[in-house]
Each structure stands twice: as structure tokens, then as C-alpha cells.
Length: 346
Image 1 (tube, rainbow, N blue to C red):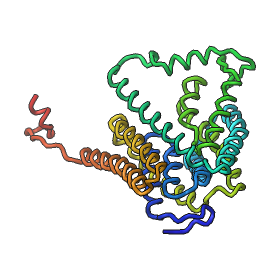
Image 2 (tube, rainbow, N blue to C red; image 1 turned 90 degrees about the horizontal axis):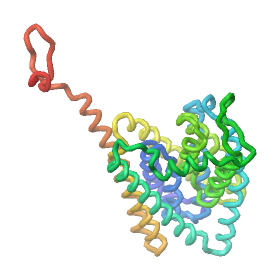
Image 3 (tube, helix red, strand yellow; image 1 turned 60 degrees about the horizontal axis):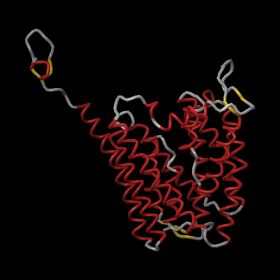
Image 4 (tube, rainbow, N blue to C red; image 1 turned 45 degrees about the horizontal axis):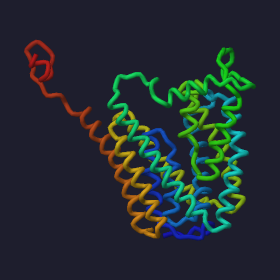
């Protein structure tokens, strides 16, 4: 156990490192930030909710810097979109923080935000399961029939001036107000919940703004860096950031993320999505246990669930590698190369 002076709490360093590592694996594998899992985790481990949010923002900012430098994203960023979203987010992240400080002063911050996270986690897990079974049932059907695509098309038809073009020479334009509202919404959620906003920004950038996948990913990293960087500074100046824990998460989760990215080469995401959704639903139950005063069972449940998810991904990778390296059995025909048993049976 180590004492964290800013949050005025003790935390098990091994548990913090392990949780960061396994959540990082899931984050890298599924292409998410993992922020929506870190804030309730830190609260369950003993962090007051405001400190959990401030620490999570510091982690996200550090992770964004490492991602930007490591992957040299700068040449693929749509700077116009990232600056508009980031600046709008700077304004609203401050408003989200003010709400947290108000709730903290009233003594209800942890209770209110735990309830919010219960609904967020239930909604996320349910949505993932619904989409998984819908795609499985409608395999081969056009994705344009989904309500998300219909909503995206309706938003693209909105011609509210001023209209701007995100790509030089492109005849496609989008209402500036849509981008500003995106920045304001995700910035407010960042300041209020400590989330990165990527779960909202990325689909918006791809489906409504029409950015290519790589450009959207790089633009999202830069927008996250601008908004979350300001949020980190703001929470730190308010004395609500535990820097030591943020550094531990940057290192442990960053290591796990690299392993998760490697796992993409060997394992299909679709096979593990149901487990991922189930883990998210279990985490919502863990937050509920914490809310009702059952801290120890809540900690065991959330830590056990992320361990199972991380180990499942690792084991899947190991099995795939072993299958690739396993020598093919077969027979040798004189004067010809060895053929597999499948070829021989033909």
C-alpha cells in the first residue's frame, strides 16, 4: 500500500498497475481509450470522485501525447476540425468541472456520478451486445439500413450556415455548428465524467464529417489532447489530480495498450465482443456495489472482470501464434514437394 497525499488515500500499487495493464490491453484491442472504466475503478479503489476524474484526465493527456509522438500522427490530422473541436471542448470542460465542484461541495459528487456511471456502463454494454447480435443476424445486409446511418444522413443534410469544407478543394461542406456542438458536448462530458469523448467523436467524424478512418483517429487524438490537456491543468490547479497514480496508469496501461494492438493481428475482435460487453455490464454492477457500501466485493468484481478480459485476449493470441507455428502434417510423394493431408485426400 502506498499513501497518495493529494487524494489523501491509500492504494495498493500492485492492484493499480495490474488494473491499468489489463484495461490497457482491452483499450488497444478494441480501439477505445478505456477512460470510462478507469474513473469508476479509481473511485472503487478509494479515490474521491473529483480526484478520480482529474487523475483520469491526466492519464488521458499523457496517453495522447505518447500516441501522437509514437505514431507520428501530425501529417494525418485534419487541423481545422481538431482545433474547432478542441477549443469548443476547452470552454465546456471547464463547465463540467464546475458542476463536479458544486456537487462535491454539496457532498453528493460521488453518489451522483456513480449513478451516472451505472447507466453509462449498462448502456454501453447493452449497445455492444445488441449490435453484435444484429450484425450476426443480418450478416451481409447493407449497413445503411441501421438507425445510426439514417441519423448520420439526416445530420449531413442540415444546411445551417456558416458551412465549412474540411478538405481543401472538396465540394463537400458541413455546418460549423455541428462541429462546435460536438466539441461542446464531448468537452462537457470530459469535465464531468473524466471520459475522453472518443466514443462519440470518432463515429461523428467518420459518418457525418466524412473523414477517412486514419484521419479521424489522428484528429481525435489531437482534439483529445487539446481538451483533456486543458481539463488536466484545470483540475490540477483545483487540487483534484493525483499525479503519481496518473503516471502509474500511463506506464501500465500504455504497456497493455501496445499488447492489445499486437493482439489485433492474431485475434478477431468479433469473437470477444460479447465477453467485453459482459465485462462492462459486470463493472456497472461493481459500481452499484460500491454505491451501496460493499466496497470489497466491488473491487474484487471489477478487478477480476478486467483480469479475465485481458487474459482471454492474451490466451487467444498465444493460441493463434501456436497454430501458425505448428508444422503441417502430410505425406511426401516421390519427386514432388510435401503436400498437406488435405491436398493428399483430394
